[in-house]
View 1: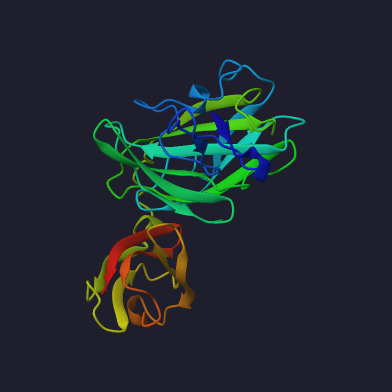
View 2: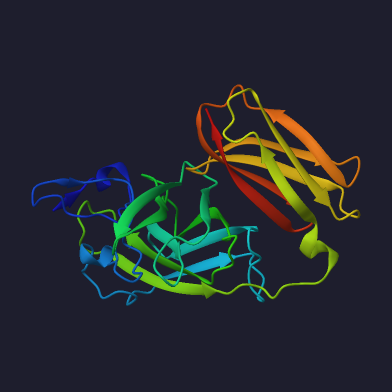
Length: 280
């Protein structure tokens, strides 16, 4: 089985379509090593998993005490191995029951992409590399955002990576995988724990050209940010706003945004709330 490494792609998550088929130059979902999944070692099996001189690790700005439900965090998967110049990865965030936890958001579409896979009857959303997205000397950093689940479920990130030798076939590549669990932070009684209250978005679905929203700030926090993301993680709208009073009632236009489903996120004082928006 061949893969198109001539183009400089790192195939972490390839599956064999047939014994004569070429493999996709992009990453694929379902090879993170999570329950019910294999890793890319199923094809790139010259060496035992995690036996090489390299490593894979997950980094984030999630506090040691745990994540806040609904908050958005910056995540990084780092695949490293000296003398290698092509890397790939596959990552997903799961609840204990094997379903998606929170929302993964693409922040660099040149390097990463979202893909879905069904495992044990559950649809799982993965973030994986683009073709050539992991072209980098000695290590590659794949960054993305993750919005924690509003229900506050404990979450485990499963991640796998490959350090490729660019020989055009699967032999000689090293595979690494690991996981990292995050718990929910204890509920704080401070003001910032309730910086945003009574969040509402209307109308929804949106059939006109404007989305209205309202919420109550805690009285001390007057700065907030609005962001609108497509479900594949593309930022469609962003604005930083200074509120005139603690009761915020405002709107913004969506006439240039294509019809579809989006995620509207509001952030203030280290807290965030979100709503799924349907634009007709």
